[in-house]
Structure formats: C-alpha cells, structure tokens
Amino acid sequence: MSNYQGFRAFNGKLSFLLDKKATKKISILFLLTALVFIISAGLGGMAISPLAILHVFFGGGTDLEKLVVLNFRLPRIVLAGLAGMALAVAGGMLQGMVKNPLASPDIIGITAGASTAVVGFLSIFSDKNHALTVSIHWLPVAAFLGATIIGFTVYLLSWKNGVTPVRLILIGIGISAFMQAMTTLLMVLGPIYRASEANIWITGNISGATWEQIWITLPWTVVFLVIAFVCSRHVNIQELGEDIAAGVGSNVQKGRFLLLLISTCLVAGAVAFVGGIGFVGLMAPHIARRLVGSSFGALLPTSAFIGALILMLADLIGRSAFSPLEVPAGVFTAAIGAPYFIYLLFKSK
Amino acid sequence: MMTETIHTESLTLGYGDSIIIKELDIAIPKGEITVFIGGNGCGKSTLLRSMARLLKPNKGMVLLEGKAISKLPTKEIAKKLSILPQSPTAPEGLTVLQLVKQGRYPYQNFLKQWSKEDEEKVMNALKATRMLEWKDKLVDELSGGQRQRAWIAMTLAQDTEVILLDEPTTYLDLTHQIEILDLLFELNEKEQRTIIMVLHDLNLACRYAHNIVAIRNQTVYAQGKPEDIINSELVKYVFDMNCQITIDPLFGTPLCIPYGKGRRIARRLEQLNA
Image (cartoon, rainbow over all chains, first blue to last red; front, side):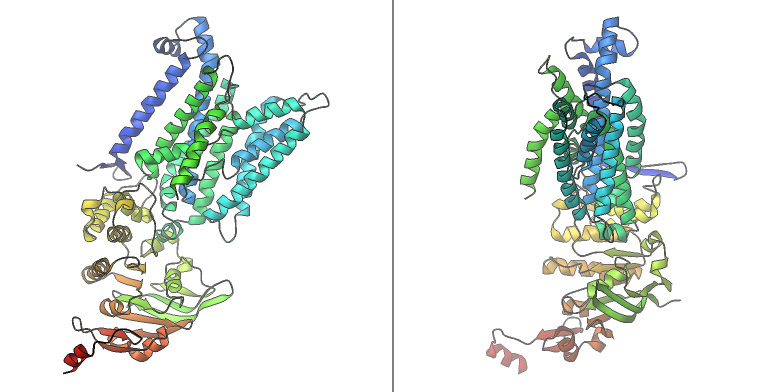
C-alpha cells in the first residue's frame, strides 16, 4: 500500500498528491495545538479546568472566569500561536531557499533590524523628561519597518548578477551584527529605564498582548501563511538547487525574491507584537523536517503547528513557572534554541 | 522534418573577461546521442550549460528548433529540453517519488499539481529507470547508482524531446556507469529522444555516441561519428596525449589505448602478436 494518494476534482482542474503519513501527523499536531490552547488558558494564578474553559469559550462561565480567560490569557495564547506560526513558516522558507538548515530570520538580521528600530523609536520619541512624545501604539510599526527595511537591505547588498544563498547568509550575519551594535549603542546612550524596557522587547515578550493587536496581526499573518502555502512548490524547486530549478523552468531570481519577501512580511508581522523572539524560526522547521520530510506542502503546515506549540508553551512557562514573576517567552525559546543550534552545527560536520 | 534540435550561431561563452568558447557554430542532430569530449576546463560543460540556458552567452545565440532560447519563455523551454547538472544534491528527507514529481514542474500550477498525465509520466519515468520499487525510499538513503537513476527519472518525468546531462557517470563505479549509459542508450533507441551529454571516458563515449563533439582551444575541433573522427591525432590534439587507437573487440567502436608508463608483460604480448 502506497503512502501517497492522488486527489483530483473539477474535471482535473484541481489535483494534488497527498502524503498520507504526513497528513496524519499534521492532524495530530493540530489536535495537540488545540489541546495546549485549552489547557494553557486554564493554567496560571487562577486555575480553571479545561471543561470550564470550553464553557467560557461558548459564552458561559462566571464573570471572573470570563475576565481572566478572555481578557488576560487568551490574547497572549492567540498571539503566541500566530507569531509562532509566522516565525516557523518564515524560517522553513528561508531554509529551503538557501538550502541550509541553519538559516532563520533571526540569523540573517531581520529580527535584529526590528530590535534596532524599536530602540531607536524609544530614544527618538522621548522628551527631556523621558516620557514618550508619541503613542506607544506606534512601536509595532517601528518594529515592522525595521524588519522589512533590513530584509530588503540584506537582499540588495547580496545582489550581484542575482542573489546566491551563501552571499545572502553572510551579508545577513554581518548586517545582524551591525544592527545589534547599533541597538547596544542606542541603549547605552538612552535613559536607563528605557534600556530595560527595550531589553525586554528584544528578548521577546508576549505579556502585553491585547485583542487590538491580534485583530491587526491575525489577517496579516493568515494572508501570508496562505501565500506561503501556495508558494510551497516553488520552495520545493528552489531546494533542489539553482541549476535544477532553472532547468525545470522556474525563474530562480524571481522565486528567491518572492520567498524572501513572504518570509520578511511574516516575521515583521510577528516581531512587531511579540518582539525579537529567537530560535523558533530555526527549530520548528527543523523538527518538522524530521517528522514529515522536506516536501514543503507538508513541511510548512507542520512547521506552523510546531512553531505555535513552542511559543505557546514558552509563554505558558514564562507566566506560570516563576509566578508571580513574569519571564519573557524569548528567554525560554533561546534557552532551548541555543543548545539546539549548537547541536545542529555539531551534527552538520 | 527538422534534423537538428539545437544549434548555435557565433556563440561566445565565458566568465567575466575570460573567454571559454569563441564564436562557435554547431548543430546537434535530432534523435541521436551526442557526447562532448575534451580535456579538463576545455569548456564542454560550459557549452552544455549554455545550451540549457543556464548560462547567458557573451555573444551569439543558442537556438532550439530554430528559435533563440533567450527569447522563449523558460517554462516552454522546460517542456522541450531538460538538463541534469553535474552531481546534484537532494535535500534531506525527500522521497524518490517527491523528487521525480518535481520534473513535472513546468506542467503544473497551484491548483493542478498531480494530473493524470503527471502521474503517468512519473510512473513511466520510475519504470524506465527501474526505480518503481524504491519510490517511497529517501533519496539520501540510496546507493550512488540508484540516486543517479532517481535524478534521471526526474529529468525523464519532464518529458522532453531533448535531454542534456553533465557527466552523468561521475563518482559511479564501473558497473553503475554502464548501467546508467545503457539506460540512456535504451531511451534513445526506444523513444528516439535526443541525448546530449558530457563524458570523461573516451572509450565509453565512442561506444554509446552516434555523434562526438571534440572541444579544444575555445572551439570544436571535430564533430562526427566516433569511427570517422577518433584517431591518434585527434586525441593528441584534444587531450594532449599520445595513444594508439584500435577496435573494441566487443562493439567494433574505436578503443583508445594511451601510451605512457606501466608494467609490460613481454610473454603475453608475444602470444598476442603470434
């Protein structure tokens, strides 16, 4: 019995090949994400049973339960899930495009660009008394701009009769280091309490999540996740290398630009609200690859769910393990992610 | 009917300022196996790559069925001509079927990713390369010979009249070299596909090629049937090597025996000459 099942409809206008094992695994991951979603809504200072949570979801529960779940916990969980998906899918696309499992949005400088922009925002828009002269609501805009501008700077600087993966990675690492230096400089020059605020943002923090933020990031993220999925066959081709891709009639440079654009948009949309959370974009696609192989039709959804799980769990631990102290989620993703990265480097020898 | 598939007009190729092929006019016969031979760095791979539009000419052009490939949409070219580059690498965790399916890229779009025709061509490609039973295996778990067959299956799935291969037998042991070349020979015999490839082994080139293109000094030194053009002067000029050309006792094709050093067993030579 084969692992693949062809599917055709509408007079052959729609057809695809389904990987049965991968489909099963993606379904399981989906259920797992839903489970973590419900359970983590119940965990924290006030424990609520999963059944009571479901009750609240469907409009029931006490007022206190409603307040805690719907206003405090749910925005965080939803935002963590969305950002996790966005970062993971962006990482998966970059890894496919550059044919290197060590690539990720935080390594090629996109996240660092957002950090610099945020710190720059905090220092430029502070008056003499260190109060912000514009609304803090503009902060995500600054982060978004920082991420996209750096994404394109890296792309343009890598251009020399086209962009090659190696040049993209090396320039990205260089730009990333430069932006980190800029961030540090701005923090040292700025007022001390701004520095600590900036630092929490740079580490990646979901505690300030609001529904307002979610209504902005949700459509953005969903649209680009769908586009990413639609483009998965282009990632598949890119992953076979430049010559093969060109040989089967793919426009390699256009494809690279498109994939980098989608990744940057996904990352920018995520870091604008959750900050410079690292390593999710590196780890999630890699774990996904282990589970379902490297065909992107299956790899991207799998990465998305794993990314959501990682960030939801990191935020859950961050807000409950050291209660009443809040630890930024980025601390946990880095605490697991950094050793994982070293393990990858070690293994790839 | 047209008898040539690809031809070039004063084609000049190079990287930066260094010229590799200069003002070359050459025509590749349809439905035959053409093999490019020449020393290292003579430009045979470069010429092959430019014929597959992977390299832009500095001057001149490559024409496919009489039309300049630089003017044709890349997907249209991909339906007529496929190329297998030298030692391609597959990403970790890709199955043979998933790889071979990629050959259908020029025929697919977002909605149509596995049409009946796709399935048919992929299955035929797997059968022709005897890879059907390995279709669910991971490419990185295959032996060198099987892996190369999987890649060839991908180029076959592309279903093109012309197939270009850049040293398809590199890094393979002798058994697998013969296996791959037999496979390509069969494809040419059964389906009359035009095969153009670069080979290092002159004797194998003589055995499988209908048409040999010998490249030296930025241009084609000679082109024709191996038995018509391969002689010791050609080898001396093209490879800068002294040799004696005899006849292959199994196939009757030219067989090149290089001069040089080595053990001499006088007793056996006397027996042979007696």
